Length: 565
Image 1 (cartoon, helix red, strand yellow):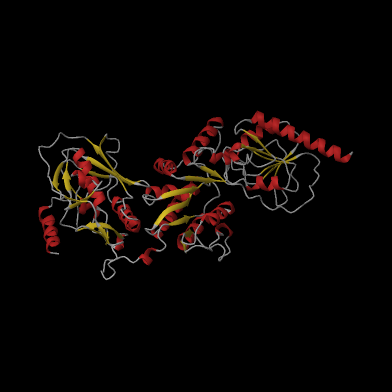
Image 2 (cartoon, rainbow, N blue to C red):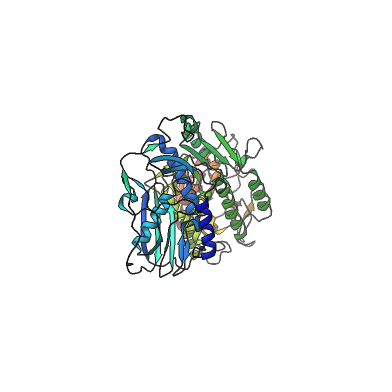
């Protein structure tokens, strides 16, 4: 306590150490130093939960460092930036080496971060203002190379400075801590501190020493459920629900917006049985529903609101993730926010894909907009490039991609697992006989659903077109066509269902039509190529669409004539 008080007074009076803000002025500067160290370094299996605690502590600490920019000549202080390690901030008991023993301690394991920062500072030729070596080292660690820096709140600190401004980038992959410095590399300093370490070939551990009467001894039953998987989901999907139930274990956790079965909300009707715990984010879900009802069903404002609520839900889930969650299965809309927040670092994860990646989605919309520049909707919204980049990076680091949508799965040939669509149950009905062919366009009239291609393909054909939503491209869009809005009986009266979409993530009406043996023509972007009976065309190809429509209608006419005969 005396040492801590002395350091606190010294910092106040001397004002050498300051807190620095996160900025983006040096993002494009050259990489001048990097340090990479393994996360999972347990010596004995019994220590694995302590290493997981260390990784949780690293997650919390690097959130205070990633993106930090230090002005030229200013002193960087580890403790000034990270602050005291408390449970309130999210720190847990982690693996700490003290006096030759591995012990559990709140905030334990941060020396891996200080080691990496010191290692990078040496590589960048920074001036080392303060550094303390570990008194003992473990084989394979940076301490063995004399490139370590132990820290202990607040008087055992790591401090360094550079003649030039520099930027710190810190992140966790599933198995490594990565530290990068960006800026201008300075000339090698005339000296830096040297410490002497005592190497030890073996260390004792509170997780395995068997000294039950010691207050630090860790009882095996304390971590009986260690190493669980957490399933983080949002909007209900019957296919993903079945997948989760087939892959969960009894010690796993389920995080849902709301218990849809209990509150009669079909959009959140996830199966909650069979988990060690089920967590809800009811308040955030209620606020989201309220805001959603006040927005139109389409448009940029709605998309911005959706992204904001996804981030709120993701952060709510992140606060509920315990340190012993080593694997995460996450629904795609939450992924970039969890990745950006560093919550997936030190964990493996799979992604339940509900849509095209944002980068690919926007590429397809851009292509469609080039074809139809008059569209009111194809260019109305694009996501924040930082969010798009976060999703792209996260998907590259995902272990597996789980999808029902064939077009999405094709984007990840090496790690995609394609699930079968769950075909809807359709009661038998007698098809309504129409005076002339009746084609159903099972979507609103928006450019991304291929309405321009369909309009071109149908010109001159004597038929009735049924649309299943508002004409967002304009009230006069279908002028000159025998067009009408469909009702609940749209399927019974359909001779053909057509959706030449550039983007379609939920082809449920197409699946209903297929289940009812109604002919379906769909673009490959609809993701149902593997479904029997579906005729596939390329999005944007009105000529091929016209040929497919004429072929199906001719075949339907022949079938009807043969039945009459």
